[in-house]
Figure 1 (cartoon, rainbow, N blue to C red):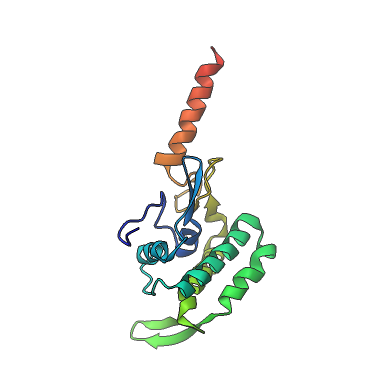
Figure 2: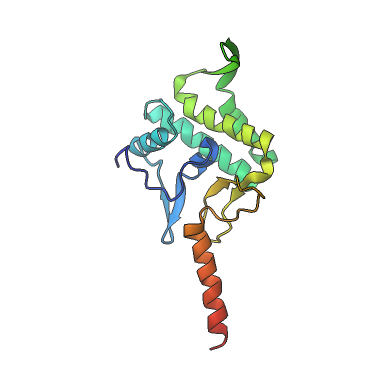
Length: 179
């Protein structure tokens, strides 16, 4: 798998949700981008995270993905400890720049960088618009997205994919009832 090609059907979401989207369904089969460091390199490149695709980074990133899955697909209360465990490996140092206040993430070990950044990103999404963090409404899709639509009613990870499949399914059901 080349770092230049991202096989996932949905990429470009905020880094926390993009990490969740490293698992997806393809023709009824579960796929996982993060089975090895090559897949990790693809994800790191897609998110412009300048960390090496090492075994340690992969282990920590998978831990963050599991923690995010627990809070997004489970409950905040039940999953908080897992996310807190990832967050314990970094912090934000406030800085003053020519543009004003800045922030610099610092990690206990650089191999925690991508995991920590994804966990922190999720906290930022929760702070700004928790009701916009969504899972795709298609029954066989496991992807997540951050709803940026004006009225906040997006239901599908993609209208071209899952949205279209749902419409086709409803159309088929309507037209076969009369047979």
